[in-house]
Amino acid sequence: MSSLEEHAPQQIQVLLDPVYKNFELEGWRWKIATVYLHFFEKEQVIQRHQKVSRDSDHAASAGCQERVMSENEDGNPKGCAHLVVYFAPKSNQKRKRSQSHVYLRFVLQKTNLEHFAAIDKLARRLRRPVSAFSYAGTKDKTAITFQHIVVSGIESDRLLSINTSAGDTTTAIRVGNLKYVESPMSLGEASGNRFTIVVRYLSAEPQSTYKIFRSTLESALSDVERQGFIYYFGFQRVGLPTSTVRPYHIGKMMIACKWEEALRLILQVKQTDSEAAVRAKRLYLESGDVEDALKHMPRGMSIERQVLQRLKRHGSGAFEQAIRTVAHSRRVMYMHAYQSFLFIGWHCFGCAITETYMVVVGDLIQCNTQSVRTGYPTAGWHKRCFTSNATKDACIKIMEQDGTKEALIESGPLKGAYRSLIAYPCHLDWTWQEDHDESLSLQLSFSLNTGCFATMCLRELLHSDI
Image (spheres, rainbow, N blue to C red):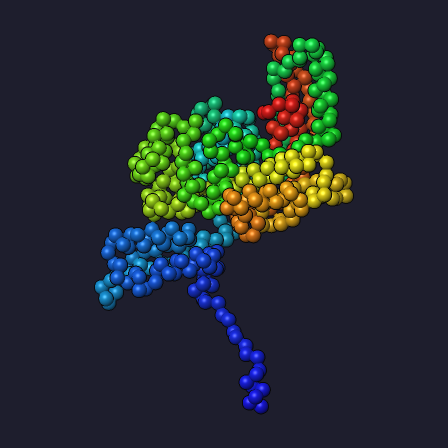
């Protein structure tokens, strides 16, 4: 009997450390939790009771995680000032039936104004944080655009006051069609967009006539309606090639957790910056002087001021903490830009190696009851089915070089999806107009599914970059 007991298999019970369990419930990764706990070991902190040291501990505490708070606790028996670190309380209380509606949906009309600039302007006038606004996507700057926005904590009469204080008509914003709703909007929630576009100053080739010219364009319109156009992402998503810093550059650094590089890209000088903004940015980029740069940064530069204020508060090395002060929707847009850049490169490389737009071995096929279409994935942890040819190897290599492979493929902030290579405009209509100078104009109206860019459709029609 004793011999059997000696050879009986032993059972080892493993229990998760309750301290780590608390960190896990707050969304921490175990590696970060381990570093955090090692930093605040009693043997290291008990003697560090001077004010300067406590200030650095506060900064380190805040820099480790967004939802951690700290405070000093005096009066212990040994006469030392202890640093108490705790999780910030969650603000997820449900609204009671007796409380007024907290979400107000409205239509935002903006003219010649960049999307995030419009949201910043609304936030300042309504004295609400940018995070109080939610939407399904962004709209172009150089257009008159309409879209649904949801804001929390604002009464209808206060929101309508925007229309009487808009002021500058060249960058005007107006609101209307107000309705109380039960929840905010999410990115990608829209089902599509309707476009009305006027293409002016069209002219025929010298050897052609307007009749032939119109016939040629109408034939191209019919072809695009029937055959579709290449489903690229537009420059609105990834940024213009002429820009020194494009949105996908910033998104790449965020996904790779290169926080300092991402912050420096945000603070890079742009051609559209005012002299004051250029001076403030260069103060930080060249000398690292946070306070002086913040002092000279114009009030309208909201993102730049936010990251500098966080550096001032938590230390010049709190780069991740500073990046996380940028509105969540904008951070996601930066990362989506990098996803889009990979998709474009993926598709272009596939066409280059095959020298054709035909389906080849290893391509992904999307099948439904109505059609069969070729597609490519947008890199993300939710969709891991990639093409099984040289295109996959090339894109994996790009992600490895950028340091984004693990975050995008294994686990990270972005979900993947499958995207068709061809998009089709719906309800396509057109009319011809003759202007006073005898030039020809073409008015187009069509609908596109969510994620489609009208500029890509126009490029296919006009055979020119838009």
